[in-house]
Amino acid sequence: MTAQQNHEKQAAALEAVNLVKDGQVVGLGTGSTAEFAIREIAERGLRITGVPTSERSAKLAASLGIPLADINAVETIHLTIDGADEFTEELYLLKGGGGAFLREKIVAERSRQEIIIADSGKLVKQLGAFRLPIEVVPFAQRFVWQRLEMLGAVCRLREGFTTDEGNHVIDADFGLITEPAALAAELNGITGLVAHGLFIGLASMVIMGKGNEIVRFTR
Ligand code: 5RP
Image (cartoon, rainbow, N blue to C red; front, side, top):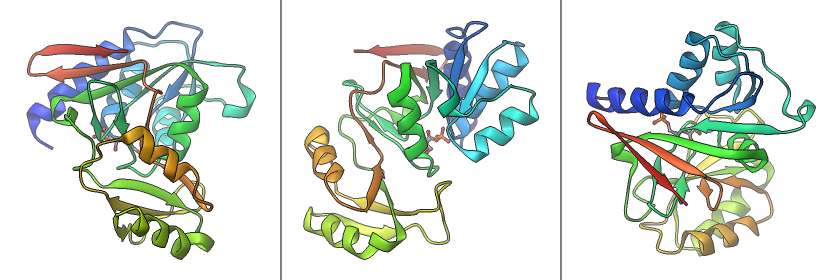
């Protein structure tokens, strides 16, 4: 990661934390950009309850003294701040580089607002240069792999990696994804495929750091 990328990630994170208010339940994303936001929430002494999207983020937040709640114990999640591996101006996201996308998607679905923070290298015209992460139940791995190949993907198992839910991740290269919503619908129909990294219609806003500027994308 370059110093410029780091600077952009942190700037986006700080801007997003301006949206957080005391008393809110806040989804805590996963990855280096989300970690800037988690640290900033603690730094500002905001009195929130965090719902972490991974064990990794839970550990970080707890170490910083942020109170956490089980997702099943909260009525609502006011907003979530999370990163992405790629996004388009239509707010289609490709996520899952860190392997936390199942929990990230569940938290996003439950959030009133899903705020994505990113450096300028994440903005693309079309998703797919980054391999699409697919979380699969180990029992169904071969079956799902074959289905993905039938859809035109070149598959690679993320070796030695197990998700927080005890599943495996296949990184699938579909080339550039011209119709993300259609591909997402196909993937949703595969038995044993627990989640994929396409987030369609979930992001409320992307806050992107670009040099010393902040650029916002909204629906
Ligand atoms: C984890 C993710 C992350 O948000 C994504 O990988 C971005 O990571 P980073 O902020 O480190 O660039 O989807 O599952």
